[in-house]
Length: 475
Figure 1: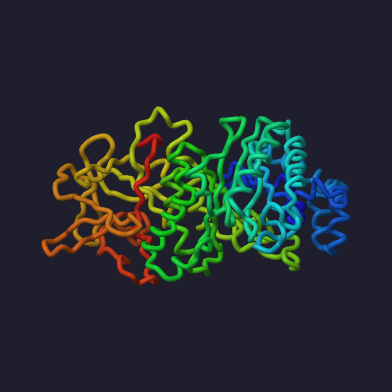
Figure 2 (figure 1 turned 60 degrees about the vertical axis):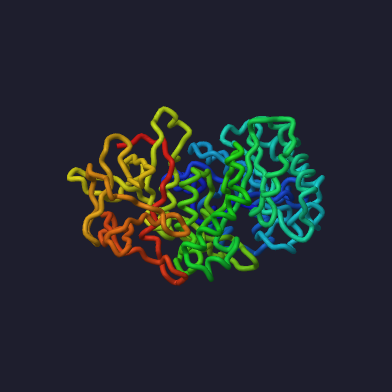
């Protein structure tokens, strides 16, 4: 119930590390019983840690954050939110569960309305108390009503009833915050909204949230060709939640992430796919997770978080290359704030999280997406600069591609199930080459298209280029 990491670093140091890594928002979890259960809401930090025999963590807090030792749990939560605000970080209050514990399972009693620890009246009471508590906190921009609804009790009828009641309860006491509704089946499914929307007394502040991990549906990633797995899971994502964007509803991908150790094959194959989809849809998102470790998780003291941005000492990044790829999505591709720029295409390379641009001498290479070229993809299959006639032209196989003005015969087609292989014919026998990245990690070349078959061990991602709509300023 105390934000992780306060035994490792001062609150302000953690907030500043968040900012230094390019993040502007924290989805801060809390348990309902922090507010509604007197035996918990009255606990001080010191007493809470003593009851759990967390001696080392308590000593660490005494070193790094001694001022919080005698605060109650909810007062520390307030202190964290306040400090984030002082560092210009906005906050979404996330009702993660009712009874404090590691989340989540189908049988933990926290999954759905009517479960052992999920009484609707207590839940609404907690939401109202939290909304009231942060009524004047200018950096609290939203409240997520409940994380990952799940379990045998879940049903659509109760979802509409109670989520609408919860939304109205928050709005009644704090009309300023966004109200964020999660889906069913561990927040993977909002498909029922395609036929019936929620009915609320207010407008203009409703957001839906969805989660997407490789383990959301692990079978495609462990059995299918990576292009096929990406196509299937992306289609599932659109059917289950992404369709809301086409209906004009804001959608927040409030959890995604990967094992930063690089040892999870499914995660490694999924990562480029989810980055490409997030770029394509210009999604707002929250990464699971910041923490390098936990005071206590599932009975294990100082449990490490393999999905965490930070290392166990909370001072360094656990995996700099994963963080670099995430950071490519920290600036929007389409807005807000870019409405005056002409729409165009970015060629996003999810394996490096860079975009295709060009240098004097007409050499085509990768660079930061906010400094990359603006392209258009014509009906003839040409990839042309947004302004002018120059297009991407293939040279000999394995050699760099360049810009040129004679675009006849330069037809690039999306040939794989993932729709991220840009291929063209290079001989009369029908053989194709695809855009690829050379060994220097930035020069764009052509190579024989790979991983189009059913071999699920093959890694196609060096040849993945996503055509992304953008209104960024462009070269």
